[in-house]
Length: 428
Image (tube, rainbow, N blue to C red; front, top):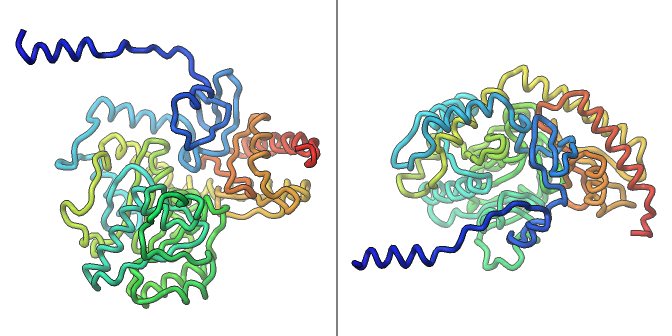
């Protein structure tokens, strides 16, 4: 037996016997997963449109869209078909080559937006990471390394990499991960005077969500975004819009900046761009993109044929004028319904805020901190909802939501609230 044969034989005998997993439940999560999530006891196994079914066959009306991801609903036929055709054609190439689907997607995005160049990756965090790196590289190349400060907003969320989580203004996500990246400052959201006070010639970029998602579903005012644009122009800083959650039709325009009439220098997109297939994109101008050169940034999977094919089909559907018109129609219907709920349950909710089909119901003082309890109650009735912090009930239905589904959601919510209110606060 030669050495190679001996090594192969040893490797073969050392291989463990494959384990067949026949049943998995919520308990399996605790046994095998890193504990960074606390998922519901519900384990969905199938979805179609706005509906999902769990392991027991119970049906749920999904008003979460996977946190603004499945904006065309689960298993959208046109997206499934595009994915299946590409799966039989070409799955992956390294970025030492290019491919037709990614070039078509990049062309479509530049034709539909302010952008002239696109960088593709796998997530919103990666898109923001690329945006922040590009902003510093551009400033360093053009003005010198001292121009490196990034201004962000408190209660913002830009991802979970060390850089992006540091730019996000929520200390709970950075605790224990220091030392953190430096030259990052946080200012109050929607506060023009605070932005003016913080801005200086050492600022390379100001980043903002046109509608804060994780921070409580808070829309920026038009005046605020206009002021940020003017400040960036005055100080030769780049304006970055994080549209990972609020983009791709969510506010009733293809991207939220279009509804505001304020154009950023860099825009990040992900979530709904792939309707559940992982993809992220950083959009910018040719002049800014030129600060990146071959080898300065990259990714293995970004722009692969599968993701690009899916995203192009999603983009084609969402950017259609009639589709966006229906989103705006549905938003009016949903907003009116939520206002009606507030008028009937004033002890629970105080106001509705947000934009388009990205809405939040703020809990009253009496029930502050109870948003998760309410989502558990709605889940029991068959309605899936989200929270945006402990005090906000978040609504992010698929953009295909019908009037009938909004009406069903109202019925289920009312039932859940009646059950929730039947339990005295002192008993919890």
